[in-house]
Length: 353
Image (cartoon, rainbow, N blue to C red):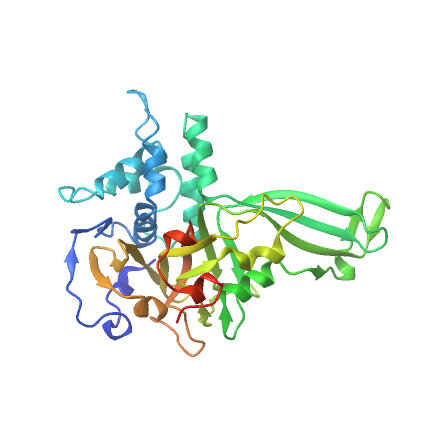
C-alpha cells in the first residue's frame, strides 16, 4: 500500500516509545520499504515471529544449483537475515523474487492475498515433499461443506482447506467469537440457489453449513474489511474486538462428525496482528508482534516497543476513517493451557479487554 500513511498520527498508536531504525528487537527488526513493499514487510514480521516456519524450512537441504528465484529458499534466507543485525536489507532478495513471478512492485496489495501467494509458492516450489507438507500443515484449517437436501435429507459433503479463516464483519460492533459463529452458521439457501441433489436427481431446496474438521498450530484469521458494492470497493472500519487468548472450546459447536477433535486443554494465543491504515483505494500496512511476552510495533524501518492496549486500538470504530489503524490479519498460536500464564477468564473463552 502507499507509503504516504507511514507517517501516521502518533497519538493513535505511540507517544513516548523510543524508535529503533533497522535494529533487531528479538525477532522484530526494521525493514526498508522498497517499491511500496509495506504489505510484504508486515507479513515478513509475522513470518519471522512464526518461529515454527523457519524451523521447518531449515529441515530442507537445497541443492547447490537451485534457482535463486525459488520462493522458499529466499524466504528462508530473509528470515535468517532478519535475525542478524549486520544485514541492512535482509528482505531485498525475497522481494525481488516475488516481484519477478508473483506480484507487481509499486502497486497496492492485499495482505491476505499475498499471504496465500507466499505460502502457496513456498509449497509449490519446495522440492522436498515432506517439508512442503509440513509448511501446509502448519497453517491448514480443514473444513467440510455440508449441503443438506430439504426433501430427502441426504447430506452432500465436500472437504476443503484454508490458510486463513475468512470472517465477514457487520457494519456495527463485532466480536471475534461472533464472527466465527456466523461463519459456521447453518443457512437456508434461497429458492434461486436450489442445490442439485444426486439422490433426488433434481434441484431441491437445501441448507448450507460449514463444519470444522481440524485446526492448525498457527491460526490465521482474516477480518474481511473490504466490501464490493456495485463495482466499487470500500473499507469497513467497524469495531471487531478480539482476545489476546481464547479457548478452542468456542469452535465446539462447529465441529464436523469427521472432526479430529479439539482438546479441552488447548487455547490460542495472539502473537501477530497485520494492520491496515487508510481506505480501500489507498493505504499502508504495519504489524504488531508479540515477542518474549512483549508487544512491538513495526512500521517498515521503524520498530518500537508497544503494549496490548495499543493493539486494542486496532479494533476499529464505525465513525473512524482514513488513517485510523484497523486489524486485518490475526495470527494465533495453539498451546496448552498449562503453558499460558494467568487469565483464567480468557482461557474459558472470554475476551480480555
